[in-house]
Length: 191
Length: 251
Image (cartoon, rainbow over all chains, first blue to last red; front, top):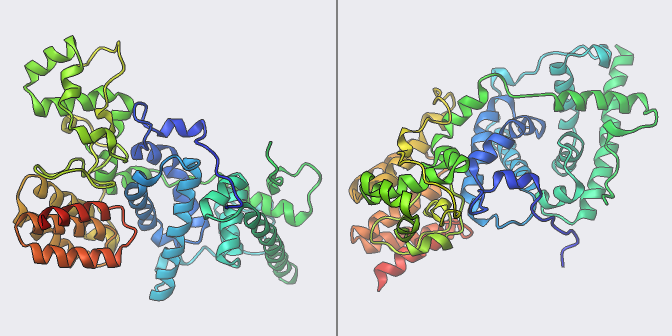
Protein backbone atom coordinates (compact mmCIF):
# COMPACT_ATOMS: atom_id res chain seq x y z
CA UNK A 1 0.00 0.00 0.00
CA UNK A 2 1.28 3.45 -0.88
CA UNK A 3 2.16 5.74 1.99
CA UNK A 4 0.90 8.84 0.24
CA UNK A 5 -2.72 9.37 -0.63
CA UNK A 6 -3.60 11.11 -3.84
CA UNK A 7 -5.99 14.05 -3.77
CA UNK A 8 -9.06 14.09 -5.92
CA UNK A 9 -9.54 16.55 -8.75
CA UNK A 10 -9.42 20.01 -7.23
CA UNK A 11 -11.87 22.80 -7.88
CA UNK A 12 -9.24 24.62 -9.91
CA UNK A 13 -8.87 21.61 -12.15
CA UNK A 14 -12.48 21.83 -13.24
CA UNK A 15 -11.37 24.75 -15.38
CA UNK A 16 -9.10 22.55 -17.45
CA UNK A 17 -11.38 19.60 -17.73
CA UNK A 18 -13.71 19.63 -20.66
CA UNK A 19 -17.11 20.98 -19.61
CA UNK A 20 -18.99 18.10 -21.21
CA UNK A 21 -16.66 15.13 -21.03
CA UNK A 22 -14.57 16.10 -18.00
CA UNK A 23 -11.46 15.04 -19.91
CA UNK A 24 -8.32 17.11 -20.02
CA UNK A 25 -8.31 20.05 -22.38
CA UNK A 26 -4.70 20.53 -23.45
CA UNK A 27 -5.24 24.02 -24.79
CA UNK A 28 -6.68 24.97 -21.40
CA UNK A 29 -3.68 23.44 -19.63
CA UNK A 30 -1.47 25.52 -21.88
CA UNK A 31 -3.37 28.68 -21.00
CA UNK A 32 -3.59 28.00 -17.27
CA UNK A 33 -0.19 26.46 -16.60
CA UNK A 34 1.99 27.39 -19.59
CA UNK A 35 3.61 30.51 -18.10
CA UNK A 36 4.36 28.68 -14.85
CA UNK A 37 5.75 25.69 -16.71
CA UNK A 38 8.09 28.03 -18.54
CA UNK A 39 9.57 29.59 -15.40
CA UNK A 40 9.47 26.29 -13.51
CA UNK A 41 11.73 24.58 -16.04
CA UNK A 42 14.44 27.16 -15.50
CA UNK A 43 14.25 26.74 -11.72
CA UNK A 44 14.56 22.99 -12.19
CA UNK A 45 17.91 23.53 -13.85
CA UNK A 46 17.06 23.55 -17.54
CA UNK A 47 19.63 25.71 -19.33
CA UNK A 48 18.20 28.97 -20.70
CA UNK A 49 18.89 27.85 -24.27
CA UNK A 50 16.97 24.62 -23.70
CA UNK A 51 13.85 25.99 -22.01
CA UNK A 52 11.83 26.31 -25.23
CA UNK A 53 12.60 22.74 -26.28
CA UNK A 54 11.87 21.42 -22.80
CA UNK A 55 8.60 23.33 -22.74
CA UNK A 56 7.61 21.74 -26.02
CA UNK A 57 8.58 18.34 -24.68
CA UNK A 58 6.39 18.87 -21.61
CA UNK A 59 3.34 19.48 -23.76
CA UNK A 60 4.13 16.58 -26.07
CA UNK A 61 4.19 14.34 -23.00
CA UNK A 62 0.96 15.89 -21.68
CA UNK A 63 -0.64 15.26 -25.06
CA UNK A 64 0.63 11.72 -25.22
CA UNK A 65 -0.40 10.86 -21.67
CA UNK A 66 -3.66 12.78 -21.42
CA UNK A 67 -5.66 9.64 -22.07
CA UNK A 68 -4.04 7.96 -19.10
CA UNK A 69 -4.63 10.79 -16.64
CA UNK A 70 -7.87 9.33 -15.28
CA UNK A 71 -8.43 11.82 -12.48
CA UNK A 72 -5.62 10.47 -10.34
CA UNK A 73 -4.92 13.72 -8.52
CA UNK A 74 -4.56 17.40 -9.19
CA UNK A 75 -3.76 18.34 -12.77
CA UNK A 76 -1.30 20.88 -11.40
CA UNK A 77 0.61 18.15 -9.57
CA UNK A 78 0.51 15.93 -12.63
CA UNK A 79 1.88 18.68 -14.89
CA UNK A 80 4.59 19.57 -12.38
CA UNK A 81 5.64 15.93 -12.21
CA UNK A 82 6.05 15.87 -15.97
CA UNK A 83 8.13 19.05 -15.77
CA UNK A 84 10.45 17.49 -13.20
CA UNK A 85 11.09 14.49 -15.42
CA UNK A 86 11.54 16.53 -18.59
CA UNK A 87 13.94 18.87 -16.78
CA UNK A 88 15.97 15.93 -15.59
CA UNK A 89 16.22 14.57 -19.14
CA UNK A 90 17.12 17.97 -20.52
CA UNK A 91 19.93 18.41 -18.03
CA UNK A 92 21.22 14.90 -18.68
CA UNK A 93 21.29 15.55 -22.42
CA UNK A 94 23.17 18.77 -21.95
CA UNK A 95 25.62 17.17 -19.58
CA UNK A 96 26.24 14.38 -22.07
CA UNK A 97 26.67 16.77 -24.98
CA UNK A 98 28.76 19.15 -22.91
CA UNK A 99 27.34 21.98 -24.92
CA UNK A 100 27.59 25.46 -23.60
CA UNK A 101 25.65 27.95 -25.60
CA UNK A 102 26.62 31.58 -25.31
CA UNK A 103 23.35 32.52 -23.65
CA UNK A 104 23.92 29.94 -20.94
CA UNK A 105 26.52 32.08 -19.26
CA UNK A 106 24.67 33.91 -16.52
CA UNK A 107 25.11 37.55 -15.92
CA UNK A 108 28.01 38.13 -13.52
CA UNK A 109 26.61 39.25 -10.18
CA UNK A 110 28.70 40.99 -7.59
CA UNK A 111 28.23 38.93 -4.42
CA UNK A 112 28.63 42.07 -2.34
CA UNK A 113 25.35 43.37 -3.69
CA UNK A 114 22.81 43.44 -0.83
CA UNK A 115 19.73 41.31 -1.45
CA UNK A 116 17.47 44.32 -1.50
CA UNK A 117 19.55 45.85 -4.29
CA UNK A 118 19.45 42.85 -6.56
CA UNK A 119 17.17 43.18 -9.53
CA UNK A 120 14.56 40.42 -9.87
CA UNK A 121 16.57 38.94 -12.72
CA UNK A 122 19.75 38.96 -10.64
CA UNK A 123 17.91 37.49 -7.66
CA UNK A 124 16.64 34.65 -9.83
CA UNK A 125 20.13 33.93 -11.16
CA UNK A 126 21.49 33.79 -7.61
CA UNK A 127 18.64 31.45 -6.64
CA UNK A 128 19.26 29.12 -9.60
CA UNK A 129 22.98 29.08 -8.80
CA UNK A 130 22.18 28.03 -5.25
CA UNK A 131 19.74 25.38 -6.47
CA UNK A 132 22.38 24.03 -8.85
CA UNK A 133 24.21 22.85 -5.74
CA UNK A 134 21.36 20.54 -4.72
CA UNK A 135 20.90 17.01 -5.95
CA UNK A 136 17.95 16.31 -8.21
CA UNK A 137 15.59 14.92 -5.57
CA UNK A 138 16.08 17.73 -3.10
CA UNK A 139 15.94 20.36 -5.78
CA UNK A 140 12.62 19.08 -7.09
CA UNK A 141 10.95 19.07 -3.68
CA UNK A 142 12.34 22.47 -2.73
CA UNK A 143 11.25 24.05 -6.00
CA UNK A 144 7.77 22.52 -5.96
CA UNK A 145 7.12 23.46 -2.32
CA UNK A 146 8.89 26.77 -1.81
CA UNK A 147 8.80 28.27 -5.30
CA UNK A 148 5.70 26.74 -6.87
CA UNK A 149 3.72 26.49 -3.61
CA UNK A 150 2.40 22.99 -4.20
CA UNK A 151 1.06 21.10 -1.20
CA UNK A 152 3.15 18.22 0.10
CA UNK A 153 0.45 15.84 -1.07
CA UNK A 154 0.67 17.23 -4.60
CA UNK A 155 4.45 16.95 -4.45
CA UNK A 156 4.25 13.31 -3.41
CA UNK A 157 1.92 12.73 -6.34
CA UNK A 158 4.16 14.64 -8.75
CA UNK A 159 7.26 12.73 -7.76
CA UNK A 160 5.45 9.44 -7.28
CA UNK A 161 6.89 8.96 -3.83
CA UNK A 162 5.47 8.41 -0.34
CA UNK A 163 4.59 11.68 1.35
CA UNK A 164 7.01 11.01 4.22
CA UNK A 165 9.79 10.78 1.66
CA UNK A 166 8.74 14.15 0.31
CA UNK A 167 8.86 15.62 3.83
CA UNK A 168 12.32 14.26 4.53
CA UNK A 169 13.60 15.50 1.17
CA UNK A 170 12.24 18.95 1.94
CA UNK A 171 14.00 19.01 5.31
CA UNK A 172 17.26 17.97 3.69
CA UNK A 173 16.80 20.44 0.86
CA UNK A 174 16.26 23.32 3.28
CA UNK A 175 19.45 22.41 5.12
CA UNK A 176 21.34 22.26 1.84
CA UNK A 177 19.95 25.62 0.76
CA UNK A 178 20.88 27.13 4.14
CA UNK A 179 24.43 25.90 3.71
CA UNK A 180 24.60 27.18 0.15
CA UNK A 181 23.34 30.59 1.20
CA UNK A 182 25.91 30.78 3.97
CA UNK A 183 28.63 29.94 1.47
CA UNK A 184 27.33 32.52 -0.95
CA UNK A 185 27.20 35.19 1.70
CA UNK A 186 30.64 34.27 3.03
CA UNK A 187 31.98 35.11 -0.40
CA UNK A 188 30.42 38.46 0.18
CA UNK A 189 32.21 38.82 3.52
CA UNK A 190 35.58 37.98 2.02
CA UNK A 191 35.17 40.13 -1.04
CA UNK B 1 -6.47 20.37 7.41
CA UNK B 2 -3.01 20.68 5.92
CA UNK B 3 -0.03 19.62 7.99
CA UNK B 4 2.40 21.16 5.55
CA UNK B 5 5.26 23.13 7.09
CA UNK B 6 5.23 26.88 6.64
CA UNK B 7 6.96 28.07 3.54
CA UNK B 8 10.10 30.16 4.00
CA UNK B 9 8.29 33.17 2.61
CA UNK B 10 5.42 32.73 5.09
CA UNK B 11 7.41 32.69 8.32
CA UNK B 12 5.76 35.18 10.64
CA UNK B 13 8.47 35.41 13.29
CA UNK B 14 11.54 37.37 12.40
CA UNK B 15 13.49 35.10 10.09
CA UNK B 16 17.26 34.90 10.13
CA UNK B 17 19.01 37.11 7.62
CA UNK B 18 19.85 34.03 5.53
CA UNK B 19 16.20 32.97 5.45
CA UNK B 20 15.12 36.49 4.59
CA UNK B 21 17.69 36.47 1.78
CA UNK B 22 16.34 33.20 0.36
CA UNK B 23 12.81 34.55 0.72
CA UNK B 24 13.76 37.55 -1.40
CA UNK B 25 15.15 35.24 -4.09
CA UNK B 26 12.05 33.04 -4.03
CA UNK B 27 9.73 36.01 -4.40
CA UNK B 28 11.77 37.13 -7.41
CA UNK B 29 11.21 33.72 -8.96
CA UNK B 30 7.49 33.82 -8.30
CA UNK B 31 7.31 37.21 -9.99
CA UNK B 32 8.95 35.82 -13.12
CA UNK B 33 6.91 35.61 -16.30
CA UNK B 34 7.94 34.44 -19.76
CA UNK B 35 9.27 37.20 -22.01
CA UNK B 36 6.69 39.17 -23.94
CA UNK B 37 5.45 37.20 -26.92
CA UNK B 38 7.05 33.97 -25.73
CA UNK B 39 3.78 32.20 -25.04
CA UNK B 40 2.51 33.10 -28.51
CA UNK B 41 5.72 31.74 -29.99
CA UNK B 42 5.43 28.51 -28.02
CA UNK B 43 1.77 28.24 -28.91
CA UNK B 44 2.84 28.45 -32.55
CA UNK B 45 5.43 25.71 -32.09
CA UNK B 46 2.84 23.50 -30.45
CA UNK B 47 0.19 24.43 -32.97
CA UNK B 48 -1.26 21.02 -33.88
CA UNK B 49 -1.22 19.85 -30.28
CA UNK B 50 -3.14 22.85 -29.02
CA UNK B 51 -5.37 23.45 -31.98
CA UNK B 52 -6.24 19.81 -32.31
CA UNK B 53 -8.94 20.87 -34.79
CA UNK B 54 -11.19 21.49 -31.80
CA UNK B 55 -9.10 22.66 -28.87
CA UNK B 56 -9.96 26.01 -27.37
CA UNK B 57 -13.11 26.76 -29.35
CA UNK B 58 -14.51 23.49 -28.09
CA UNK B 59 -13.93 24.44 -24.51
CA UNK B 60 -15.63 27.75 -25.04
CA UNK B 61 -18.56 26.16 -26.79
CA UNK B 62 -18.84 22.43 -27.42
CA UNK B 63 -21.50 23.07 -30.01
CA UNK B 64 -18.86 24.40 -32.37
CA UNK B 65 -17.25 21.00 -32.62
CA UNK B 66 -20.57 19.27 -33.00
CA UNK B 67 -21.27 21.63 -35.84
CA UNK B 68 -17.92 20.95 -37.46
CA UNK B 69 -18.29 17.19 -37.32
CA UNK B 70 -21.84 17.31 -38.54
CA UNK B 71 -20.87 19.59 -41.39
CA UNK B 72 -18.57 16.89 -42.72
CA UNK B 73 -21.22 14.22 -42.46
CA UNK B 74 -24.23 16.00 -43.85
CA UNK B 75 -24.81 19.07 -45.92
CA UNK B 76 -24.84 22.44 -44.26
CA UNK B 77 -28.48 23.11 -45.02
CA UNK B 78 -29.71 19.79 -43.75
CA UNK B 79 -27.46 20.07 -40.75
CA UNK B 80 -28.72 23.48 -39.77
CA UNK B 81 -32.30 22.37 -40.02
CA UNK B 82 -31.72 19.25 -38.02
CA UNK B 83 -29.78 21.00 -35.32
CA UNK B 84 -32.51 23.54 -34.79
CA UNK B 85 -35.13 20.86 -34.51
CA UNK B 86 -33.39 18.12 -32.67
CA UNK B 87 -29.80 17.33 -31.77
CA UNK B 88 -30.48 13.60 -31.94
CA UNK B 89 -29.40 12.94 -35.51
CA UNK B 90 -26.05 14.60 -34.86
CA UNK B 91 -25.40 12.40 -31.88
CA UNK B 92 -26.53 9.41 -33.84
CA UNK B 93 -23.94 10.10 -36.51
CA UNK B 94 -21.14 9.69 -34.00
CA UNK B 95 -19.30 6.38 -34.15
CA UNK B 96 -20.20 4.15 -31.25
CA UNK B 97 -16.64 3.93 -29.97
CA UNK B 98 -16.37 7.68 -29.40
CA UNK B 99 -17.89 7.65 -25.96
CA UNK B 100 -15.50 4.97 -24.80
CA UNK B 101 -12.33 6.68 -25.96
CA UNK B 102 -10.20 7.53 -22.92
CA UNK B 103 -8.60 10.64 -24.24
CA UNK B 104 -8.40 14.39 -24.24
CA UNK B 105 -10.46 16.40 -26.66
CA UNK B 106 -7.82 18.59 -28.26
CA UNK B 107 -5.79 16.18 -30.26
CA UNK B 108 -4.26 16.49 -33.67
CA UNK B 109 -4.91 12.95 -34.73
CA UNK B 110 -8.56 13.02 -34.07
CA UNK B 111 -10.02 10.05 -35.80
CA UNK B 112 -9.19 6.55 -36.88
CA UNK B 113 -8.66 5.86 -40.56
CA UNK B 114 -11.68 4.62 -42.38
CA UNK B 115 -12.12 0.92 -42.15
CA UNK B 116 -10.21 0.43 -38.96
CA UNK B 117 -11.73 -0.50 -35.67
CA UNK B 118 -11.55 0.99 -32.23
CA UNK B 119 -9.29 3.99 -31.66
CA UNK B 120 -5.98 3.69 -29.82
CA UNK B 121 -5.32 5.02 -26.38
CA UNK B 122 -4.63 8.64 -27.09
CA UNK B 123 -4.07 10.02 -30.50
CA UNK B 124 -6.97 8.43 -32.31
CA UNK B 125 -9.70 9.27 -29.90
CA UNK B 126 -12.44 11.34 -31.44
CA UNK B 127 -13.11 14.68 -29.80
CA UNK B 128 -14.89 14.29 -26.51
CA UNK B 129 -17.40 16.90 -27.54
CA UNK B 130 -19.15 14.33 -29.64
CA UNK B 131 -21.22 13.42 -26.62
CA UNK B 132 -24.83 14.42 -26.67
CA UNK B 133 -25.28 18.12 -25.90
CA UNK B 134 -27.12 19.32 -22.81
CA UNK B 135 -30.82 19.58 -23.34
CA UNK B 136 -32.29 22.99 -23.82
CA UNK B 137 -29.39 24.58 -25.64
CA UNK B 138 -29.92 26.07 -29.04
CA UNK B 139 -27.51 25.04 -31.72
CA UNK B 140 -25.40 27.71 -33.36
CA UNK B 141 -25.00 27.69 -37.12
CA UNK B 142 -22.46 25.32 -38.61
CA UNK B 143 -18.93 26.67 -38.43
CA UNK B 144 -15.88 25.09 -39.95
CA UNK B 145 -13.19 24.68 -37.31
CA UNK B 146 -10.63 25.38 -40.00
CA UNK B 147 -12.07 28.86 -40.24
CA UNK B 148 -11.52 29.56 -36.56
CA UNK B 149 -8.48 31.63 -35.53
CA UNK B 150 -5.29 29.86 -34.58
CA UNK B 151 -4.03 29.92 -31.01
CA UNK B 152 -1.05 31.98 -32.05
CA UNK B 153 1.27 32.93 -34.83
CA UNK B 154 3.70 30.20 -35.77
CA UNK B 155 7.12 31.62 -35.12
CA UNK B 156 10.27 30.60 -36.91
CA UNK B 157 11.80 27.72 -34.98
CA UNK B 158 15.21 28.41 -33.57
CA UNK B 159 16.51 25.07 -32.35
CA UNK B 160 17.53 21.81 -33.92
CA UNK B 161 14.41 20.07 -32.63
CA UNK B 162 12.21 22.73 -34.08
CA UNK B 163 14.05 22.88 -37.41
CA UNK B 164 12.84 19.43 -38.27
CA UNK B 165 9.23 20.63 -37.96
CA UNK B 166 8.24 17.30 -36.59
CA UNK B 167 4.79 18.33 -35.46
CA UNK B 168 3.99 19.36 -38.99
CA UNK B 169 5.52 16.19 -40.44
CA UNK B 170 3.60 13.89 -38.12
CA UNK B 171 0.38 15.79 -38.67
CA UNK B 172 0.90 15.50 -42.43
CA UNK B 173 1.70 11.78 -42.24
CA UNK B 174 -1.39 11.14 -40.16
CA UNK B 175 -3.59 13.16 -42.48
CA UNK B 176 -2.33 11.11 -45.43
CA UNK B 177 -2.91 7.89 -43.56
CA UNK B 178 -6.47 8.84 -42.70
CA UNK B 179 -7.19 9.92 -46.26
CA UNK B 180 -5.91 6.63 -47.62
CA UNK B 181 -2.67 7.96 -49.13
CA UNK B 182 -0.74 5.11 -47.59
CA UNK B 183 2.44 5.39 -49.64
CA UNK B 184 2.46 9.13 -48.96
CA UNK B 185 2.07 8.53 -45.24
CA UNK B 186 5.01 6.14 -45.30
CA UNK B 187 7.11 8.61 -47.26
CA UNK B 188 6.45 11.38 -44.75
CA UNK B 189 7.21 8.97 -41.90
CA UNK B 190 10.54 8.19 -43.57
CA UNK B 191 11.15 11.91 -44.00
CA UNK B 192 10.56 12.38 -40.28
CA UNK B 193 12.95 9.55 -39.51
CA UNK B 194 15.69 11.21 -41.51
CA UNK B 195 15.08 14.79 -40.52
CA UNK B 196 14.20 14.25 -36.86
CA UNK B 197 16.33 11.33 -35.66
CA UNK B 198 16.08 12.55 -32.08
CA UNK B 199 12.52 13.75 -32.37
CA UNK B 200 9.95 13.69 -29.63
CA UNK B 201 7.24 12.13 -31.77
CA UNK B 202 8.97 8.91 -32.71
CA UNK B 203 6.19 6.82 -31.17
CA UNK B 204 3.58 8.63 -33.21
CA UNK B 205 5.65 8.17 -36.39
CA UNK B 206 6.06 4.46 -35.79
CA UNK B 207 2.35 4.00 -35.12
CA UNK B 208 1.54 5.72 -38.42
CA UNK B 209 4.14 3.70 -40.34
CA UNK B 210 2.87 0.41 -38.89
CA UNK B 211 -0.71 1.23 -39.81
CA UNK B 212 0.30 2.28 -43.32
CA UNK B 213 2.33 -0.89 -43.87
CA UNK B 214 -0.51 -3.05 -42.61
CA UNK B 215 -3.06 -1.38 -44.86
CA UNK B 216 -0.70 -1.68 -47.83
CA UNK B 217 -0.62 -5.43 -47.23
CA UNK B 218 3.03 -5.42 -46.23
CA UNK B 219 2.16 -7.57 -43.26
CA UNK B 220 5.62 -8.93 -42.48
CA UNK B 221 7.12 -5.46 -42.43
CA UNK B 222 4.29 -4.19 -40.26
CA UNK B 223 4.74 -7.08 -37.82
CA UNK B 224 8.49 -6.58 -37.61
CA UNK B 225 8.08 -2.89 -36.98
CA UNK B 226 5.36 -3.54 -34.40
CA UNK B 227 7.62 -5.99 -32.55
CA UNK B 228 10.41 -3.43 -32.48
CA UNK B 229 7.96 -0.80 -31.27
CA UNK B 230 6.74 -2.99 -28.43
CA UNK B 231 10.27 -3.77 -27.32
CA UNK B 232 11.33 -0.16 -27.41
CA UNK B 233 8.17 1.37 -25.94
CA UNK B 234 6.56 -1.26 -23.71
CA UNK B 235 4.41 1.31 -21.90
CA UNK B 236 3.49 3.44 -24.88
CA UNK B 237 -0.08 4.67 -25.03
CA UNK B 238 0.00 3.73 -28.74
CA UNK B 239 0.72 0.09 -28.05
CA UNK B 240 -2.95 -0.84 -27.87
CA UNK B 241 -3.55 0.61 -31.31
CA UNK B 242 -0.47 -1.06 -32.76
CA UNK B 243 -1.64 -4.43 -31.42
CA UNK B 244 -5.12 -3.87 -32.83
CA UNK B 245 -3.66 -3.19 -36.26
CA UNK B 246 -1.47 -6.28 -36.20
CA UNK B 247 -4.28 -8.44 -34.87
CA UNK B 248 -6.47 -7.11 -37.66
CA UNK B 249 -4.10 -8.16 -40.44
CA UNK B 250 -3.30 -11.49 -38.81
CA UNK B 251 -6.90 -12.75 -38.98
